[in-house]
Length: 185
Image (tube, rainbow, N blue to C red; front, side):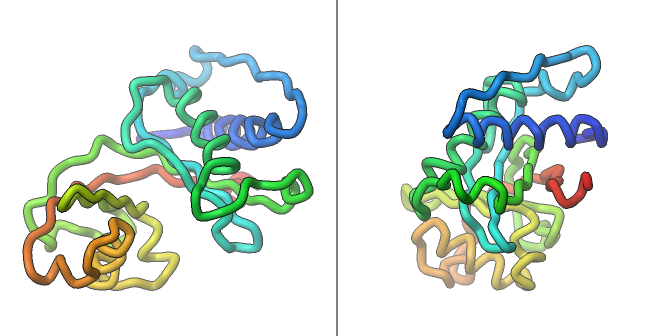
């Protein structure tokens, strides 16, 4: 998805504003769909929060029937307050948090593992009633090869890490437009 610099800046500002609203009343910014048509797009989005490059929260939606701006706002609040791996963000952490936004393409089925391109494709696995998702940037951030990425998606879903070696998993691929506050400084 093509997202302009100004749209990225606005989306990151909105995500941060939503997180701040957990602690104090913060006025909503007006939405100018004419200036930023991407805000009307209905797509999946994830918001990732880090402190000192360490994960502090990450929640999002693979797909959404709401406009991007509303999906983003909800994901930001959820990442800050509902990620079950972490305690909710504290007010004294607000200035230490770095935000990253991943706008997802529509997922599409994978036929064989050769289709996976590290850094380009994220993975969604659905096997044995379990589900897991890893964003496209994960293997690059953790210096994973394809085999380690496949093992990691299995682990994320609570499956045996080597299950992908025994059978072709029910995997879907997706791409993402990823940007962070570091990118817009």
